[in-house]
Structures are given as C-alpha cells and as structure tokens.
Length: 223
Figure 1 (tube, rainbow, N blue to C red):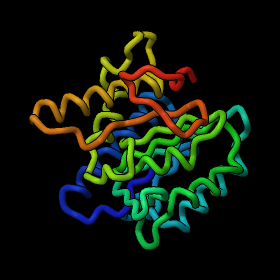
Figure 2: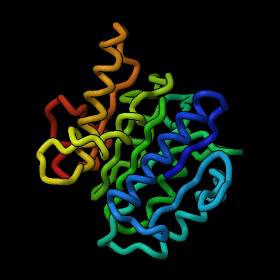
Figure 3: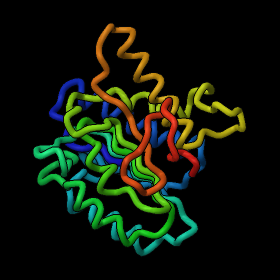
Figure 4: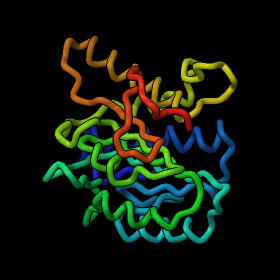
C-alpha cells in the first residue's frame, strides 16, 4: 500500500486517512499478518517506509523472492499521477518518480495473480503498460488526459467495509465488487454536484490493456 508525495494540506490528510483505513481492513477484517503487509508513505514512522523509488524497488525485490504462483499480491497506489505525453504515466513519490514502464519491469518477475490498483489522476497508462494474463489492473481514469484529483480511492477503500460492497452477499468483497461499488459512487458524486465526470474507472483482467467500465458490457471482469 503506497501513498506518495502529497503536496501537503488536505491531500496529505486524505492520503493518510485512506491508507490507514485500508491497512486496518487488511489486518482487522481480512486477517493479514504484519509480515504480509508492506506500507509506504510520505513520512516514515513505525511500520511505514518512506515512499521512495529505492524503497519500492527493495520491497518488490523481497516479494519476488517470497511469492509463489499460488499467492495473490495486491498493490494499491494512492496519490498524485502525471502523464506528459499521454503514453507513459508516472506515480509521484518522495524524490524521483517511477514511471509505468518502470513499474512494469519491476512487477514482471513477481509470481502469483497480481492485483494492481492505481487510484490517481492520469492513471490510464498504467493499465496499458501493466495488463497481462493472470493480472487484474484497475485505474481511476480511462485516459491520461483525466488529470484532476480523483475521488475513486475514497470509495474503493470504503467498499471493503460497507455492507453494500458485498453485492452478492456471500460474506466477502471481491475486487470486481469493490470496483463496481467505487465506480457507482464516483458517478453519483459528480451527479450530485451537477458536474461532468472527470474520471472514469476501468478494470482489465483479460490482459488486453483496454479495460471496461463497471456498467459497460465487455469481456473483462470474469477473473
């Protein structure tokens, strides 16, 4: 779980709140042990590393050595995203950023069914770069041009604690259910304010690197 450079103010407050809420869900609701949860943030503290490219490279290197094909690693990015050319996005870190193509190289050797969730603005290039067989990739936007601050992360994190997130009432919230819950909440958020939506979340699990919106038909979502 990574929250990057915030720029201070309300951004820092929101990123800390969302990160802490999701980590609490992992521990308290889903029963993950401390040894299975890696947390990086803008400021180092007990159990939390500074979100630098070096620390991310080290954590992913550790995962590469630990994980087997039967594991399911999940990476959640919360923060600011940028894309200069519309093709290669970046996630803003403390110090030099990591581009989508660099994330792809770091994740390629990691075994298991990867779930990668980029909740930032301009996150779409990550879907194109990281999509592959056996992976589930979520982005908060469907184009690199959607660069405004996103509300998707608040609702994605909330989905795992809100009983409404469990749409089929089987006692657990799947990645698809969390994606659908957050997507619906994002649409409602903009509609209530009478604004055109500046973010449209996508999910890809076919490896095609195209993805689909929750309410639209398409092959993605079966995994």
